[in-house]
Image 1: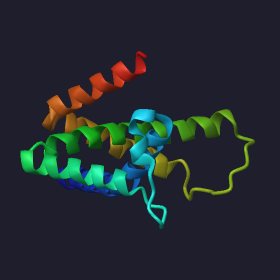
Image 2 (image 1 turned 180 degrees about the horizontal axis):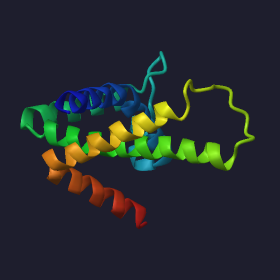
Image 3 (image 1 turned 90 degrees about the vertical axis):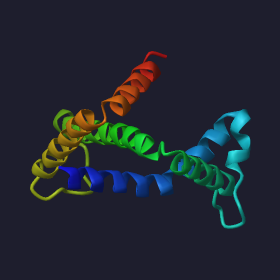
Image 4 (image 1 turned 45 degrees about the vertical axis):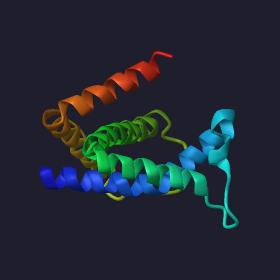
Length: 146
């Protein structure tokens, strides 16, 4: 289970290295206070957003809080992925006549396996890092109460 959790966290980090600056860029486009994050260089990369993410990562590594943040982000992103895949299964049942440009071999086995592995990872992470999981759940609940 530790190996699965490690792979999950590595996948989360690699995804966030690519997606994180783009999210910050969009936030900069929507909120005036964060407008500097939406500036792109000549090649179209959100340089300031990349630098901010890099700076935050360095602070976390140097202060030793990186592991906690990684657990927090891993829990949150895995939870969202599990809910999304479950939503796909539900959508396929509710809307069977929608066009399906991509067919999943052996459907519904792969999404169900993904959901089971994701739930097992969430459970294991909750047992290993209860404070990170509690903070993630509190943040999600508080964001949902808006």
